[in-house]
Image (tube, rainbow, N blue to C red; front, side, top):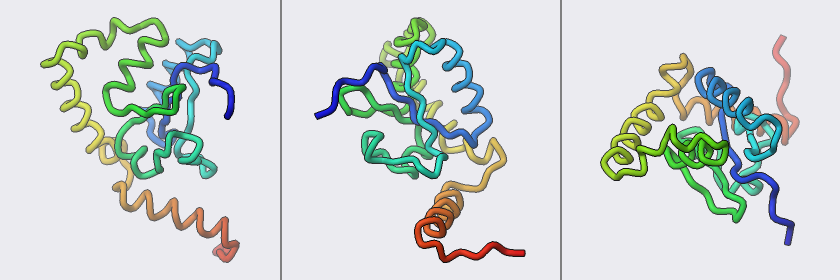
Length: 148
């Protein structure tokens, strides 16, 4: 069995989402190379669900996820709450611990997550997943031709 990781939380993020990248860049600055947060780009073609709590690409694209050092996973607003706590800014999401505010935050996040791709000018999730699979199949099988 491997040693316990040095990071406190592993964030799975989409580097092809401009708004997501603003948040990730902010969090990286706040981490300040301390290694408290491990940042994993799900858009990377080498992304591996096995190394990231079993979270498959499509699930990770649909909702934000994070992996904890014990291998368990969390998603949605809980991810933000935990990351901000780890980085010493827990007060930002503290109100979401109150049940009614937590419920409202979760509902607002669900709306954002459902509309994230459209709002950032990208194709729908089905098209993105299909295009990614096509690229991966091409790489693995080596059968694809470059169009001229």
